[in-house]
Picture 1 (cartoon, one colour):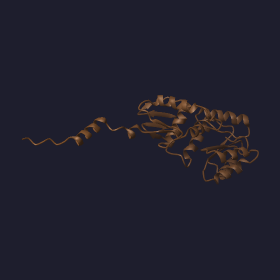
Picture 2 (tube, rainbow, N blue to C red):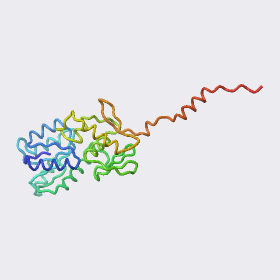
Picture 3 (cartoon, rainbow, N blue to C red):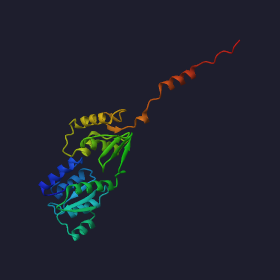
Picture 4 (tube, rainbow, N blue to C red):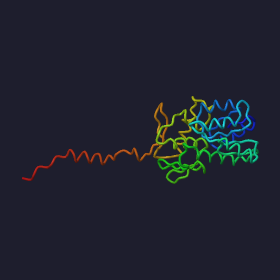
Length: 243
């Protein structure tokens, strides 16, 4: 969220976090460019009339990057001509102030789905289905009632599946840049999430590596009966012929 009006920026950021988004704030153009160079974002909500570096210049800089970020211009300049000029700079969407907050949330989520690295809308793995738009999660058809952070962590794990996601990446994706890297909040959230997902467990942990979603059916042990039967058949000596 890039907005020089701090009161507005702080209110919007807090509201977006309540919607389960990991959000950072920048209050001028220089701070925005520094954050864009440091962190990976899906969407930038960008004011145009910024101190330091103008929002139009930032928008052009973003469109020239290899790791493309979706841009939503959120500005008081809302005339048809302003919209045309903003979109011609490379912005992906344009919303004039004053705005309706639920509309802003829907536009951000729509842009995140259009982001080049975004996957299909519904995420599926190990019997889990998560719909980021409808904010719903089921496992084997059973609805799960998750908190905002539990939902965000599960979404991050499903997007990465079957790869691991480190604790640091979960903090960045489900919380924000100010999250304490030494906190146990990820461990606590994973524990609650495991309980709600139920058996058989699907979130595995590898120390110093991170967490991942693993399909229990893919790692199911071979039946002991089958192993015993195979061993017996191999070790059984042919019976001597009758006299």
